[in-house]
Length: 348
Image 1 (cartoon, one colour):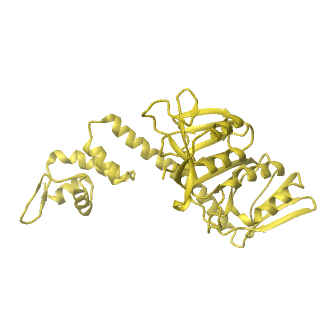
Image 2 (cartoon, rainbow, N blue to C red):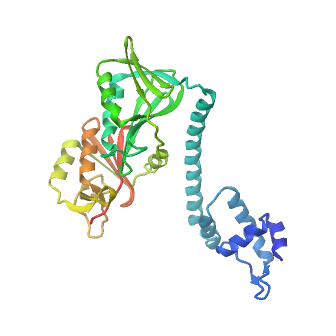
Image 3 (cartoon, rainbow, N blue to C red):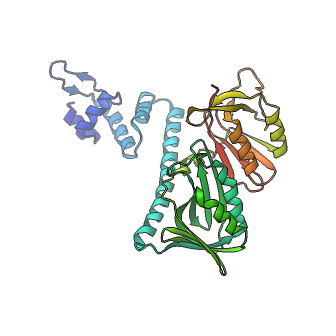
């Protein structure tokens, strides 16, 4: 079959077939060395139609090549498709949030209130304190702020410096159905916490480029930071299936860290930092020494780990381990939706 005949039979454009030939996805049976004309076998039509279907659902080229080259490995193929489906679902949820925020912007061009809700001032203050430790040590454009992501009946607070991420969820008054996102600058957080310490029931308004907090006659307004946060939803979704979890109280983890042998490792911006190696077991134990000679550790920044442990609410901790190159999650039994993540680093 000529390339034109093959294109009509499979539904793939001629230019696409040339590309798939160049990257090894769909190679013709014969190429004329004199004219470079491609000839495809009729037995390749089924493969071509499969490639067209995979292309329509947005599968990356590398994944298409994997499926075509290992067409008889059903387990591998299912794993590739499941991973792609998860990416699509994560992208859909992120798009849903962005479209809701865009709707607010388009229907509110004059900058009136994008969202208004009631919440408990003490819960909001506790959530702020539990995430602020993850803010950048030095001011950095776009990240020197706490993100407040309001959706439905809850507000999620997020802080990150790219090497760690902390998040906490605050319930809103029953019946709230708000959609809004704003960022409060790091320099304004002390004033916000001071105000929250003097009030109880809080009326919050996000809009007109400011966050307004009110409780009766008391009020505080701060200008919103001009920040574009990274898509943190993808990072949070990566924690759904940890390989192992270890539960221990805060004092036990402190004692473990104090008795550990620290190593010289790599910190933010390739600076030198103290790091500690952590090992987990299927039985739910965590240690700083391997149980077997071939056990791989996760290497984390010691200071960051201690700050995460101290910042969270409650005494009972849960450490979620996945792989040595995946984030370590530190959760709190008293408030499971308040947790932090540490990106793994390496020994220098």
